[in-house]
Amino acid sequence: MSSLTQGGIIGLMAMVLFLTGMPIAFALAITGLISILIFLGPEQLELFGKMTYDSVNNFGLLAIPLFVLMGNLFGGSKASTQLFEAGEAWLSRIRGGLAMSSVAASTLFAALTGSSAATAAAIGRVAVPEMEKRGYSDRIATGAVAAGGTLGILIPPSVTLILYGIAAEQSIGQLFAGGILPGVIIALMFCIWIYIAQTMEDRSTNKHLASLAEARKARQERTYSWAFRFMSLGKTLPFAALIVLVLVVLYRGIATPSEAAAIGALLVWVLVTVIYRDLTGKQLMKVLLESTNQSTMILMITAFSAVIATILSYLRVPQDLAAAVSEADLNKWVVLLLINLVLLVMGCFLPPVSIIVMTTPILLPMILAQGFDPIWFGVVMTINMEMGLITPPVGLNLYVLKGIAPHIPLKEILLGSLPYIFVLTIAIILFSVFPEIVMVLPNMLY
Image 1 (spheres, one colour):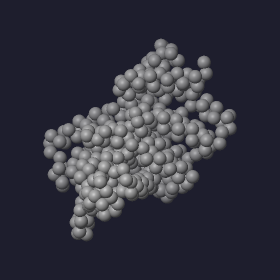
Image 2 (cartoon, helix red, strand yellow; image 1 turned 30 degrees about the vertical axis):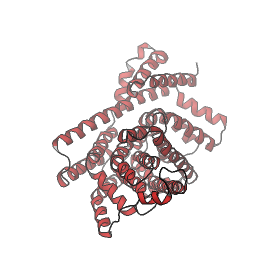
Image 3 (cartoon, helix red, strand yellow; image 1 turned 30 degrees about the horizontal axis):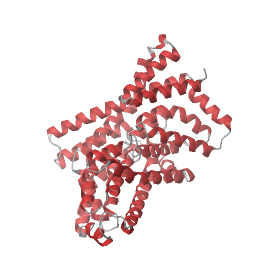
Image 4 (tube, helix red, strand yellow; image 1 turned 90 degrees about the horizontal axis):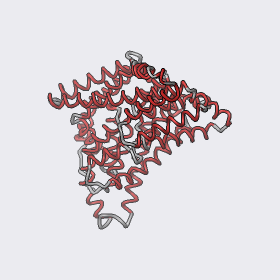
């Protein structure tokens, strides 16, 4: 049996277990155990424990629970409301400005949390009800928040980029730097689409509201003085300064990613509990428990995904797949297109964490063989993972929005999010044609 056939069997086995509805970490663990029994032999079963331990015995992974804690401390406070209010004060007079403000708030929130689901949940709780009051359609309101939430896995600090850096043995600092400019550009592209979508809706004759005049009246924004705008902006400055501080400490080599995460978590705790006096004892305990649960889930998925990746490496699946692609003599852009299509399909069923850990050891040899930069590919791969967060049937952000706004049909949330998949596709094409957009900051800082 060829190595590629063996790899296909392992992938099919994992997919069948996923479809049963069991937790992904357990499905990966069972797949790993059965794969060892079938392909390596019962006498090698003890390797499962060793592989599991080795996969998480990495100091770099300590950054994950610390960044999760940092994000949950921030998300548990009223800071998300302040971010949205600042965005609303500055953007509300623009057509679709309230939806744009949710994207702007998500961008800054993402830079503090590194979690797409947390970003969508925190901003959505504030933004969706406000947009409904102003006459925004369900599609525009939920689509903007769901798409804005995807920025959580791209704008640093990003758990996804940390895992890719560890799996690909690349600099996490460079990956963080590579995610900044694409994240900002994608946020601007989201805002452009919101303006276009709102314009088309205003001109449509098939609206829920009786006329264009009524639509504009219902969406009449509040009037904000310049003093209020700058005051609202000032409330966000401590968190913006915190982001800059963490990134400077990381990029200047003063601290490792794990140490920078510890500094960030400590400073966020000081901000929300000591300065803002926002989290009480019970709320703080709840945040700690949520952070423990989320970190455990992520690390379990990471461990068992790494087991499968190690087994595939033992079977020489990555090497033989890379060789097969080289022998096929395909154009490197065709190879990149095929890789992105595979990742997109996987993203419809699996969370980014498991996809990154499982596929990076397989895809990296192919990418390097085609002459692509591994830092650039890590950013492009993460953008692809963003699509999976708003793509059915397992688009996490779709269900987060459904939980926030249960009265809005899931179909409307899905239809509102679909255009952003095309926006992200355009972004991938843009960064593929002009890779220097991704690499300018990593090259400048390193």
